[in-house]
Length: 622
Image (cartoon, rainbow, N blue to C red; front, side, top):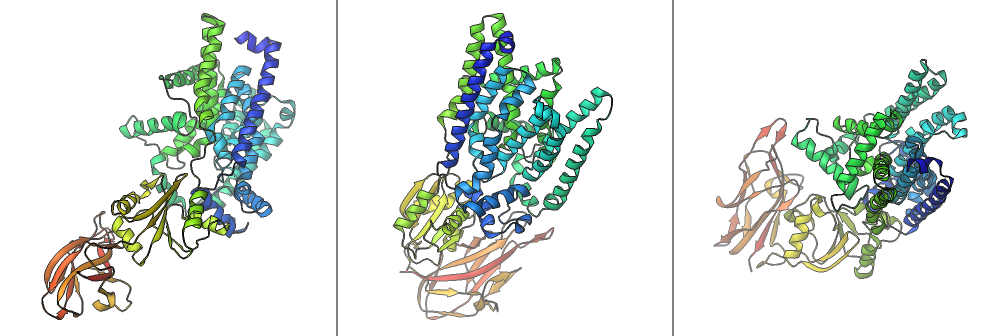
């Protein structure tokens, strides 16, 4: 196989034909993904609303909804939508152009690193049809540009193309400086390119002065970009908290570190990035191939291959361990080319062994066998289209009166974006907190006296409203459901407490406890007592609407008394919620006094356990 790969002219012509076919196929898939009419999803809409709201200069400042991106990426997207409109295709076009422009470089990078046309062809095929690369090549996020930057920097560093050789330093200086402003991971790749320059200095036994301006310009642009746009960014703390699961535990061989690596391996190779077919223990072939490629590179002193495959992978893992950059699927999309190159090179080495030791046909059969496992899931699941909100919005437009209120959970910014675009017609909407209990939800919608609409993401209710969804269905409150593309719309009836009238007989507001603002009555400690309230003879139920602040994650527990008789207790949460019903019988017409006492008052390390009473509902029993 080695002799054919290097010398056979017919084989080289065949490789050229296959290269063109794979290139055309990869371009077709990218065109299809880009123009198929996919809606923007939540993360993209967070970005899109910033582009709609702000101009070029304002985009240099911190953005809304904990969004951030490289400055030239932000300006590039803004330029596209200013020219072509604030539509899905325009928002995604910058990343898409980077993707189709750098697609052929995967072949040439692999060829330069391995010196094998067969390896380059296999890697090019796997890269061209990969679902993750295709999906992020057409998304309003910079991850597709990260991949393009890897290919550009590596190609300009290692290519033997005559034009690149003559102008290598000029190209690296320009492209490297620009890449810092387009991609947040570019510094890792520039570090690898800088290491290659140092290796050249070592081989030549002297510093190559032509490299100095390149390194200086990179350093200046990196430091300027870091201190102007990244250092002390207000979203940093929130992002670290959001991505805490994606930081590598530092205790060697601990259970946490082992589970972390196992989860990342599963994501990279099977579930979220490479989408290899996981069957018949094929994972062992993957690891054997990576091992063979690594050992071969070390034994043949192919340090260039190691520098542009293993070094960025290990660097990113190190940054993850230091809590500087999460190691998570879309944030490491740019590491797919290194993984693909290592795997395909290893497959080639194993196939060569079979070819030389057994039979040439066995080597070819092994490569074909691996290609099936590399590409089957990617072909079968194309196009990747996990979320699509427009049918759900159309259901709202077609079936819901304009005056009906819409309560939005996770898709709130998607709905805002499509309201701006004129696609969503019902503009009376309100954001529901992502983490909310059923009691808090019912209080949140307590003003609704007729049907309302609950619009939420059905593919990820684990964000904190799963119990709400289950409860409204269990209580029979859902009049009608519509579900499509990861979104669900429920037309919901107001909650009517069984056995009681539709509305409260009386509402006790904070003013009844002497609070001047009539907003909420705080209980800092001890108890509060209302002014006398006149109630006719009869049976009543009391419901308290309150929230609290915790100490060590323990929320306040309160006792509820009427005329000094304890009717029950309730526990508060971080949002306003309703207590359970507490029954009371008024035997004669006359006044009653309500008392609420905080039973577990505490303060520690700056935290204070307090209660905030919004209102008390007095419901007359039917």
